[in-house]
Length: 253
Image (cartoon, rainbow, N blue to C red; front, top):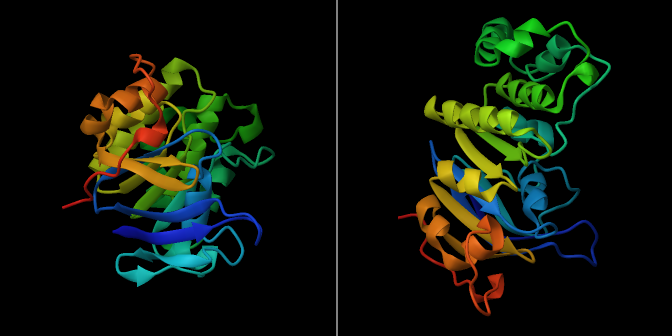
């Protein structure tokens, strides 16, 4: 469904953040991208969405066989991709209802029926739909952010650190929502600092280090990888371990 091939991108001409990144998100799957802060995870999502001027400088992004490279963000969104940004991107002075409806700007004809689906998925938002978004808890704001993305009726949803800063109760609710959204046919690309939770629901996973993909495999395979356990799951100690010892594995068959 989504394919990145040999992407090189950055924020200035002198700075390269992504160095030959290639990855895929197949139809109907959940794919997670792991990596330390500064590895290039958010830059990958921004490059997909056309949010960095004139990037990528090398490589290509295709979605359902159509090139997205150097297209504007609105065109990319209209193609069926929605982004839930890190930090949620709330318009805090607008109500929950108004925030949600912003996501339906190019699906106005079906907005009301989609809104009902979103409110059914997140009943708490039904109760708070006339509150200003700035008065909500972090978990409730994350529900608004995901709901706003769903208002665009996406085929693929990109999620950037959806559980960051949330109480454990809301973390589980967010992951339940992601799994439910995927079960209804929406493909998912997930960046998540909670690697354990991400790998539990991911069909496939990539590890990004210093702008390069250094490891890939199924979610189950990466959960059992000793370096992943050491560096991201905190489950074991591996003498002389490090991401630099990772080796690329197979791609999707």
